[in-house]
Length: 187
Image 1 (cartoon, rainbow, N blue to C red):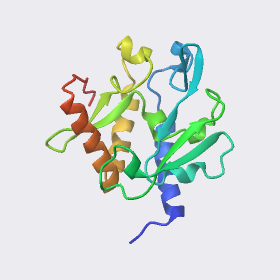
Image 2: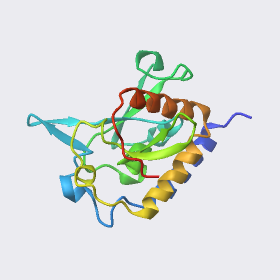
Image 3: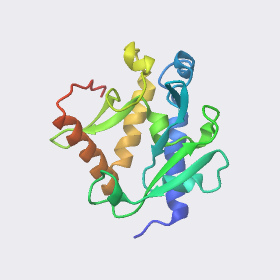
Image 4: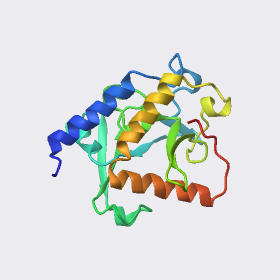
């Protein structure tokens, strides 16, 4: 049975609602770094950070004034072959003052990212190697809220039920493993 756009949007909203209940720290972690994950300064030139969206997540941005939505072919980027559809990216038009109610899943789960080991087990790891700035949470090894970790894990367990999302996470995990860099497993 194919999922309609309306059903997909409701599913994404449920994920957003789950993640709205938790935060990495007991306070606004953006105060530590001036919201560097929204905007970072590269040689005194502000650069907006575009984020890749998961399938169906683009529906959350169709009528948004605060975000630009971009579409690229999955064949033009380093994505698994199972991604036949286009890939969407979103960029906040007024960082760091975005509409937090529709922040992408990547924003909501940062600094954790999913990692699937070679046996197929899902873990959450710190996103230490793939960001263009220094996050104080990672740099200072700050302890994350347990509720945030647990809810983020539940969300990714739900998301990887989509075979295309699973393929992307497994693909990124193998690339990470092939670089042989250490990463910190959180759960």
